[in-house]
Amino acid sequence: MAESFLRQSTVRLQPEHLTLRHREILQLVVEGRTNKEIAGILNVGVKTIEKHRAELMRRLGVHSTASLVWHAILHRLVMPPP
Image (tube, rainbow, N blue to C red; front, side, top):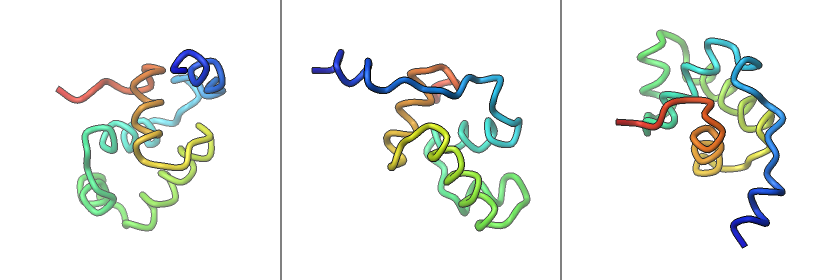
């Protein structure tokens, strides 16, 4: 069953296709940070983070934060949290 899911979840996005900002945001999402916390860390508005996060989810073809984190770690787009 898991093998079937892995075969279906082909990610078109490679690490080199992510902007530095997307990688920063993705890393912070993987670390469990909220949009508000990420906005504070990066000195931008919450809406900006929401837009980046939505774009990341669209590019990866996922619809939840859990799937976003799973794909990011599985495909080594970011480092898993310590």
